[in-house]
Image 1 (cartoon, rainbow, N blue to C red):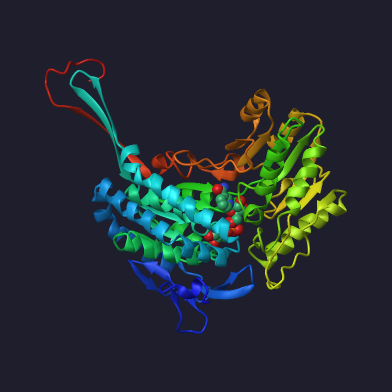
Image 2 (image 1 turned 90 degrees about the vertical axis):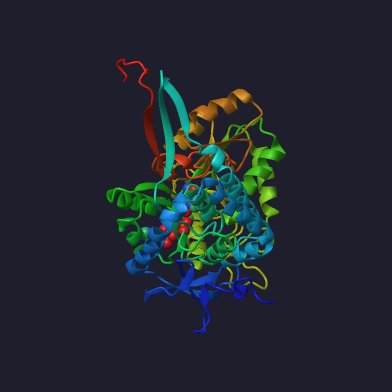
Length: 500
Ligand code: NAD
C-alpha cells in the first residue's frame, strides 16, 4: 500500500527522484528559488519522505505580491460569503479526515488516534470561524441626541503565520480560518520538518472555493522567516514555536512596525494533593506527560507532589507502564530530539534523582530506525536541576516533593514560562487558591491538558507568549482586525454641548 505522502497529487515535484516540496503562490505550485534543502522524514520509521528547499526572500516577495493582489477583492467580499467558504472547508476536513490523519501520522510520528484528534480540533476551530459574522459584528450606540458612534472592523491586511512541527495540521488551522474569514489574505510558513499537511490544506481551501492568491505557502526555515519579518507589505505575524525563536520573531517583526503575536515554549506544572481522586489524577497525569510523545506545549512536565501522595505516584507509574512505544505512544520528531531527551534523563539520574520508569534505549520491533523514547517518570528531582527548569519536549515527567501547596506554587511561579498549570484535588477551596495564584495562562482543575475549547481563546503568559491577546477564539478578532470608529450626526436638532 502506498503511504499518505505518495498519494499527494500536487505540491511535490516527483521528476527528480526524491519528491521535492513546492511553494503555493497565487493558487499554483511553484518551485522554491532556494538552493539549500533539508530532508522531510517519517520519524516513526527514520526514513526519508521528501526534500524541502529553503525558500529565500525572493519567494517570500512573490507570495506577498500574490496576497496583495488578492486582498482588494477578498476584503470586499461580504463576511457572510467568506464564511461560506469555510463551511465547505469544514465539510472537506470531515470528508478527508482519515487521509489527513494518515499524513499527520507519517510526517510527525504521532499515533493515528492522536492524528485523528488533530484533524478533529482543526474542524472545531473552523466551525468557530464560521460564526465570525455573528461575533465580529460592529457596535453602534446613540451617544447623544441625534449623534451615533459606531465601530466597524476592517481586516489588517496580509497576515503571515509561522508554525511548529508538533501539530502540522492543527496549528496552521488555529489561524487560517479566522484570518481569512475576517477578510485578510495570508502566507503560511510551515515547519520545515512537517510541510506535507499544509499541501492538503491548500488543496482543500481551493476545492472549498477560496480565490487564488488569498492563501499562499512559502516553505523554508530561518532565512524565510527573517524575510517574512522584514517584508514591508506584511502587516501582521503570528508565530508558534520555541521561546527562543518566538522572542527573535517578535522583536524583529515589531521592529518593522508589524503586529506580532508569538507563542513560545512551555514548562507546565501539575500539582497533586493527598486528597486527589487517585485513578483520575494518575490517568490524567500519565496521559498529559505522554500524549503526542510529550511534544505538546500543554504537556505535563513537572509534577509537584504535595505531602503524602505516594499512592498516587505508584498508580501513575502503573499507568505509565501501560503506555507502549509504537502502539499507544508515537515517536519523537528526530534523532537529535531522542538524544536530547535521553540526555536530560541521564543528567537528572547523575544528579541524584530516582528513575521510576525509564524510557531510554527504546526500540520498536519492525521500526528499528524510528525515534522512540518510552514514558519516563523521575522522582526526587530538585528545583535547581536542569530537567526541572528547561523544556524537555518528550514523554518525561519530573516529580518534585514539597511539604506545602505554597512551596509548590513558589516553584511554579518561579518558572519563566507560563503556558499551563493544573491542580488535582477534591477540595474546591484548594483548587480556587491555585486558580488565583498559578502564573500561567491556562489552568486545569483535575484536568491534565487544560486546552480551552472554542470560543475560549488559547494562549499562555510570561515567556510562553509575546504580544497582547490570544491566538484563537474571540480574542483573535482584536489581533486580526482594525477597528474604525465613526461619529455621525445628520440632523441639526442634535444639541450642542461639550461633546459636540
Ligand atoms: P521552533 O521554534 O524550532 O520552530 C518554529 C518555527 O520557527 C518553524 O517554522 C521554524 O522553521 C522557524 N525557525 C526555527 N529557527 C528559527 C530562527 N532561528 N529564526 C527564525 N525562524 C526560525 O519550534 P519547533 O521545534 O518547531 O516546535 C516546538 C516548540 O514549539 C516547543 O518549544 C513548543 O513548546 C512550542 N509550541 C508552542 C505552542 C504554544 O501554543 N505556545 C504550541 C505548539 C508548540
